[in-house]
Each structure stands twice: as structure tokens, then as C-alpha cells.
Amino acid sequence: MAKPPGLYAPILRETLSDLYKNPPLGEKLTVKGWVRTRRTTRAVSFLELQDGSTLRALQVVLSHNLIPRERIESELHTGASIGVWGELTPTPERPQPFELVAEGYELYGSADPEAYPLQKKTHSLEFLREIAHLRPRTRTFQAIFRIRSGISFAIHQYFQERGFVYVHTPILTPSDCEGGGQLFQVTTLPLQQIPTHPDGRVAYEYDFFGRPAYLTVSGQLEGELLATGLGRIYTFGPTFRAEPSHTPRHLAEFWMIEPEMAFYDLSMTMDLAEDFLKYLIRYTLRNFSEELAFLAERYEPLLLAELEHAKESAFLRLSYTEAIEILQKSGKEFQFPTHWGSDLQAEHERYLVEEYAQRPVILYDYPKAIKAFYMRQNPDEKTVAAFDVLFPRIGEVIGGSQREERYEYLLSRIQELGMDLFTYENYLDTRRFGTVPHSGFGLGLERILLFLTGMTNVRDVVPFFRAPGQMA
Ligand code: 4AD
Ligand code: MG
Image (cartoon, rainbow, N blue to C red):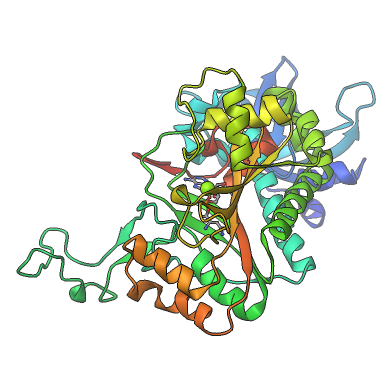
């Protein structure tokens, strides 16, 4: 097979994205990528070549005089990977600014058109979920994963610019931070023959850590230990929840960003959450216009308007008690009726955000009984200093709170809930020695990505999703 002559080797361009930024018109060069489509006429074949660096493709023209038509027709199907060389030629009369007039190509891998599941047409997101390993070949997922990458960088940038310390909290943990009991247990005990005590209890002294261990549901508890020394920290890592729910908003493995700040009260923390979310929206609008335009055109025509609107509006702050009154006065027939003390369902959150406020909403001061043990009790003794940020289309994107920093209150809450004191000894220690008011929150990366990309299912914003009964 013909190799690119030495002449061309030094001018291998990095990516199509580079080519479009600074096209070396009239020069000879080699590009490498995957065939998106091919069209063959009598004299020439046209390829659309993509390489993942941009949503734009490069048109390649192969003359049958130079390259036998039979070879092209047998090798260059959708999905095939090639390196192709020739001259980059301006095409002022065509929609695309230039094309590559090929002199030869090298085939890396063919893709049997009978077997390759991706074809030129637009495939449904449901279909693509079944072939998650091939989703990165589509422009939709290239756009989404590029935004996911950019936003991850922006998250670090936001906190680093503000002096927060990035800390790595453990993934293996003995505690259930959220108290929801949605833990994946990790063990090296033989499942066929689990050692037990005479009374039937599992003999954890034979397990790897000598005690039960789980995948973390949140880095918060360890984050608090670090914040009560370092001042302001954030975590950004994977979290795991064995939630049996099959909703489009829940994953069993998702990524969470958790800042924790010493000397912050609830209201300072809500300000930070709002500022942080607006920063991420601005960052996406500024850096991903090509991706946003594509996603808007294909999936969510209102995407750009929604992002602009959320970035410009002051989030509406309502106490839980006010929210319940609003819901009860709404005259709406909800599937789950509300009363003071009931947890809010997606339908209630959507009403508050989309109909009542018509902008993001921050709800705060929730009933103590429906929130986690670590939240600071308010003087009314019924509510805790918790908050949730609710977004249109998505519902909850952030959950946070001021933490209970008073030793006696925290201890009695832990005892009241029948939690294992031994597990929370270190946590309690931070309240015994130089305790401080402190607060933090958790942002679900996939939830904010739904908002930023216009997608409606969290399975579509993570490369390989884990959900009950499903490992992509
Ligand atoms: O509200 P959550 O449970 O709060 C915490 O875990 C606290 N420890 C955070 C903190 O104060 N440091 O979860 C925080 C966020 C939610 O608002 C949601 O965006 C996301 O994590 N989340 C999930 N995302 C995808 N799949 C799931 N199963 C999720 N559960 C929570
Ligand atoms: Mg929550």
C-alpha cells in the first residue's frame, strides 16, 4: 500500500480543529480520522471525514483516476478509519471553505457496513444507549463529552481562583453520610460462605477492614474534617448510590463537586452556590458555542435562551414553609398532595421553578425530619439550615446546608437516629476541639450537564452509565 511520501510527513496537522482555525490552503498535508459518509459519482468519491476534535467534518475528494473506485467502494464505509494526504484547496463556491484533494490514503480499520450500527441517519438517544461504546463516534456525544470536559476544568478554575484547596476524600468509607441507606457494600468475605457469629451476625472481623465498608455516597464528612483545618476546600470525584430508582435523573455512579467552607453560614453558602452555577453557565456559553448550537438545533431549541435567562436572573429564594403555602394555593392537582413536613416531589419542584418563579429557585430551611443528620438545627427546633437549588427541566441540581457545629446537638441527633457512634467519633471530634460554624453543598455534575446540554436523561451525559440493572 502506498505510504505518504516523506514530503508530506512533516506537515501532518494535529487535528481538524487546528485546520479550521488556521487552514494551510494550498499546502500538502495528511489528516487522520473516521469516515462519516461517502458519496461516489462516476469520476470522484467524496468523503466527510471527522476526527473528534471539532463537530465540523473535512470534505475529502478522491479522484478515481488516482485511486481505483473499486478500492474506495470496498474500503471506505461509514466508520472506517484512515489517514489521507493531498492538497488543501479553497472552495469559495461551496458551503465549506475548503476541501482536501486526495492523492492517496491508508486504511487503518474497515467497518463492515452490514455490522456497523451507526449509519448516516440520526439515531435515537435510546438506541445509542445500547451501544454506549460507540457513542463517541457521534457528534451529539462529542459535543456532550467536550462540554463535560470543559466544565470539569471550569469547576477547578472557579475554586482554585478563590483559594479553595482541592482535596481527595476516600471512596471506601465506613459511614453513610446521607443516612439514606443507599450504600454499595464492599467486602472480601466469601459470598458463598459468609462467616457469622453464633447469633447470626456477620463476623466482620474477618472482612478486609475488620469492619463493614462501603462505596462513598458523598465526600462531605471527610470534606468537613479537612475544611475545619484548611478553611475552604472542595472535592470533585465519583460517588455511588444504590438507589433502585429508574428515573432519568439518577445514576448509581455519578460525579459530585462538594465545597466546604469554615466560617460560612447558610446565606453566604447560597450566594456561593448561585455565583458558581452562573459561572459554569457563562463558561459554557463562552467556550462551547459550536456544541451548543448543534445540541440546540437537534434536541432543545430553547437551550440558549434558557442558559442566558438563568445566567441573568436572580435565583428566587423561598423557605420550605413558603413553598408549601405556594403549592397549596396553586390550585394544581398534584399526584402527591403536600402538607408541611412532606418531602417535595419532582412535580412540586417543577411547578415552583417553571410556573411560579420562571427562573432557578433556592429552597431553604427544610423540616428536620426529611433531611440528613448533620444539618444545623434552626431556633424553631423544627427546621434545619438546609438548601436545595432547583433548575428548570432538571429539578434539584444542588443540595447543601450549614452543618451542626454544636457538639451536644450533633451528638443527640446521632443518638436519636440510632447511628453507630464509633463510626462518627472523628466527625464529633471536630466539634469538641475548636469547632466553627461551617457550611457546604454538593453539585451533581450530571444534573448540571443536563441543563447545559439540553439533554433529558443523565445516562446521556456520562460516557458509561451505571443504573439499576444496567452497566453500559
Ligand atoms: O442532595 P445530596 O444527596 O447532598 C449530599 O450528598 C451532600 N452531602 C452534599 C453536601 O452538602 N456536601 O446530593 C447532592 C447532589 C444533588 O443535588 C444532585 O445534584 C446530585 O448530587 N445527585 C445525584 N446525581 C445523579 N444521580 C444520583 N443518584 C444523585 N443523587 C444526588
Ligand atoms: Mg438532595
